[in-house]
Image (cartoon, rainbow, N blue to C red; front, side, top):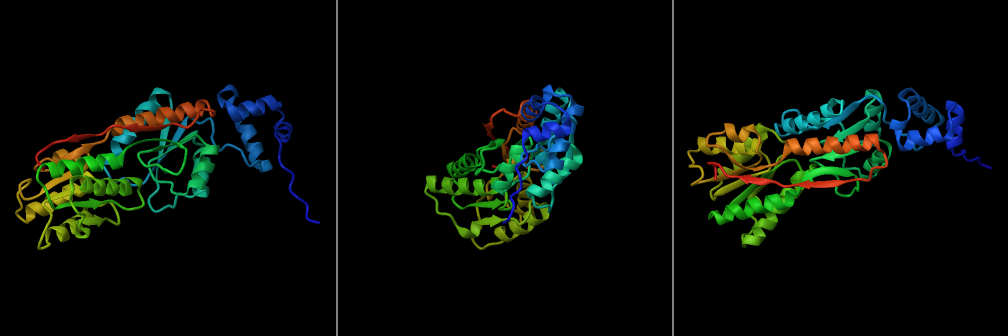
Amino acid sequence: MRSSKRKITIQDIADSADVSIATVSRALNNKDTVKAKTYDKIIRVMRELGYEDAPISHHSKLILILLPDIDNPFYSELIKGISGAADRHGFQEIILRTGAHPLTYNFIEEVVIDTHADGLITLDAISDTEALEKLCAKIPLVQCAEYNDQSNGSFVSIDDVAAAKMVTEYLASKGKKRIAFIDGPRRYKYSRYRLEGFLKGLEQVGLEANPNFIAQLPELSYDAALSVATQMLSMTVRPDAIFTASDVIAGATLKVARRMGLRIPEDLGIIGFDNTNVAIMCEPALTTVKQPQYQMGFIACEMLIEKIKNPLTPPRQVMLDVELIIRESM
């Protein structure tokens, strides 16, 4: 007969940590009411005993930020916003570039434990819903910009579908008929949703989507965008407007167009996304969608610290408004 493993109880934890059951309960539900040394001792005992619901947060005043790409200027204002809120509450940030790391539960849990972070803000996509839910149950976590729409976890973002639809309808209102879209990597929520909004915008204004006018970049890089824009603008029948999923792509498209001698915006209208410094530095300056990056990062960090201080805080989903900034490229 096979024996079953006994479930670890709160009493077991209290006995092993030499504290009361009430202290263990406070450590799990409101850790700020427990001394840091006692809290860390309780959590260590939980892990040693194999307690399944043991939190993986600490009393370090450190916030871990998962950053997918250090080259994308979009993230700089987000980080500034997070830092602004963190400083306000006496927290510091640790930035981890996720790069090619798959965001699995085990990888993120290990990083949080190794860094002794109190909480986590992810700017990268955690596509595994089960892993995300498990993480949210064990550590204060807020998704920022990118979020898993299958999860009930906390996030701060924008409505990418509505924003892309607005841009597409604006281009059509300016007389553009052959509207193209150059998108970012499909693994990102913003990429999938902006494509959806673009297609809905075309449908709204009665234009048919041309598969030759829709391109998906394997990575969000200037060089990749140069190649795709060159191919698209070398077609016999080329677009008269190109909407791009980021200012980096728009800047590369503008460079290709000017090399080909196209007039902007008469021959080709170009619209980017994010309103980064790239948009202003281009000549002519780029029309683009302004995201409130600083505000997004600030709110995400405020939400996280609230969750750190009170683990029972319910999840929140915040959508911020965007604005179309009209400049010379359209």
